[in-house]
Image (tube, rainbow, N blue to C red; front, side, top):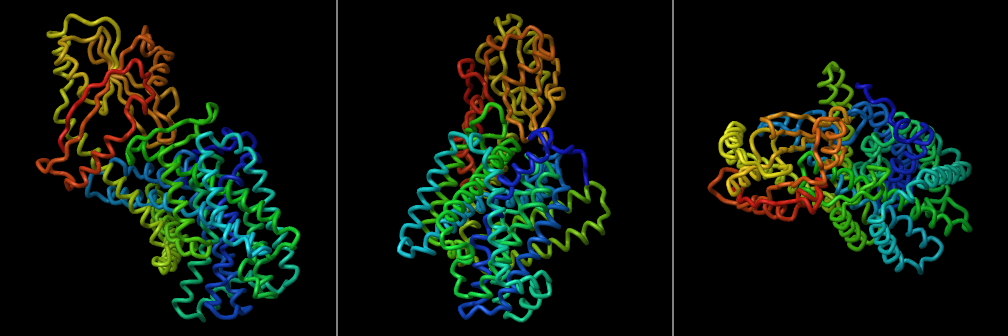
Length: 635
């Protein structure tokens, strides 16, 4: 597929090796801590309440290995990473590539948008479960040597998670530098533990053959096979981060980190745990910790807890990034977004998302209580997201001109595997799988309601908006006396006259000497270079339309955009410190008189709109220079 993305690791993270190390900490934190619980849950499913047979252990180890090879190595590392949007990955980037955002209702692209928004919402459901199961499974290691500490596991997990979410407002840049080295040590440690387990049962290496996975599944009852598949899928959760974080590190560093470090360490550890279970089936309660010598248990618990905190941090940061992209593309209402590092635009903090995610995560810990119970809730959202990603990536490949037969054959193969794993995880729906789906459903509903409401409001604005011709006539014939200074009127559309300007003229019968009508357009590219950022359209002398173009990964600051225009000589003589900004503030009135959504959904949209971040604050307009005009709009 496209190769327009020159390895971003060199431009954003220095040397490729530095980007590879960074990828270990951010991209592979989640999947790197899966050995804490994945093989244990799969082995318990294979035993289904009875004694654990060696054949079952070999079958589970083989299944996990080939899931890692098929889903992560082949599908994500080699196939999906090729579907980049100018270097950026993730489901929002796919939607932008397919131009689904501006699709007309009822078209196939509009249906794609629906599917993609469900996929984006699933990431929030996954984001609530991942910190809960990761940290909880790490802290549960205390019970291996001290069963009496079992009652302290949940409170200690809650304390750690609360501290993690409180830390978000301070920014994570100050600790981000240690993520890569810590996770490098983590992979080295779990690899060594795996070698230790394999050395005691070298016969486990026969499970390298996929025959053992297929043979074991075929000789089980249908419901048991599905339960095993659903549990084994826990080993690949977190793999979607490879694609979502591609823009931060680059395609090659992510692949190098996976094939050279993460994959070998994970395979060694899973096979080490399997070797231990063959020699000692009673270790099934916690084979990860029982791989280590007794003296190393407590240090390993501390190390595992640190690794799971890093994995959780990556998930939380990913939720912030996804929220910003969704706001930019009009899928979510504007929210307060704080930049926690002046030197790194990607370091952001979204307070509302942080605390909603904290509530969901802590609710999962308190509600489920153990990692075994949480395993029932984990996987169903991720497996559906993986299937959606495969589908959208196939459509992108066809759009780029790849032969449909080849695309359908390759992506279809992976899509069938995704669907099998989703069906297997579907059996866990009533065991907890409903929890992330409920969260994802709520987010998807809000996204779709906001999206539809914005369309209705824009349609209502279009009816109220003056055409440019009337503004020109007003400026020439009715407002010959001009007010001193410059005024900026924010407009949602690059056409017509903003309602704030219409109201200003109506009430004041005057115009400023210099009027700028400024519109922010979010493009379907991740970033827009400075040279292409500003578009100037001279309407009449003294009235200028300014269109500021931003990518969906960029923060749309109007004052910076106008400053750039001044520096480029496109707005000569403009003093930004002496400009008044006029912004419309709309009150939405739900009504049955206008064809649109159901009134109750319109009421939900109106609530979201009332509580959204004010336009002036979101677009970085200087507070002391803002004047707001109120307008009522019926939808």
